[in-house]
Length: 395
Image (cartoon, rainbow, N blue to C red):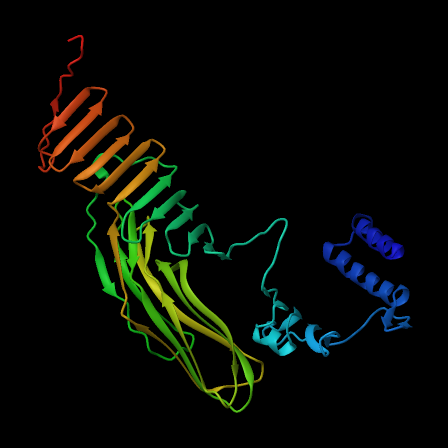
């Protein structure tokens, strides 16, 4: 052990001494440690020792001696065509590891599955799922869409599914004259999808104009996608099937709305696969104009050298969902210069910068450095503000 550590240390130190590249150092270290394993290591099977400590094999299955020798773990060097076959697994058989149902799996492509895991230390991730939270690039969203943290816009949004929103941001509350811009809602049914997937995708899009300083949102009603796969095949293979529904902005990925990823065992006795994917209703804040679209796509990969004839995959949207855009009026917005609470353009309280203004229908009250004023024509284009003389105990 000491010689191996010494060899490794010497090789690491030789990077500067010998002028080796990092790749050269890594290769030399691997070769040296392999030599150490062969000359200094040993292999023990039962009570028998073998002088060589280097073992070459393709597949090793580990058995549970206390449970009738059931296969429970293993190591495999068989990577498969797409490098997705298991390299290490536990809590199941090799077949279950390939199927993705073993308790713990580490695959050759670096992906893994653990039924329950405790991790201490640093985690680096760009996307994924954590309990009821979804991490997508610079956004963290709760499963029901009621909470969203967006580092792109530096906002925290709390959403009421029936309407209404609380927004906390590090930018300023806009001027009251641009607080409630006119933005007519646009609505279009999602396209009906029923086609063969051959690398193509299907989208349903609407063009949305977002007014400056406005908070707008896409309202996507709930819908269901029935994912179906039919095939004709005379052998047994595994297929990785992935169907996903994405939201795009001007053709660029914005967020994933739903997906179904599954490893399917194809065989001659069963010629179809069906799964229903329910996509709940969503209210998604948008801050940019452009074309917003929903894309449904499907990808599939099979084992090397196997061709499945007569593939047919389809995705049918039922309960015909809709997608529309509208300006968010019912909101509480907290910014760096104040806040606004509004339920409609006729009912709000605005306190930002040097202006405090309240409107209730046609009546208004405002306080500025110039004093207090009232208005009884808030429902008119021309609003007449009248100063209010404050009566104090001192006259």
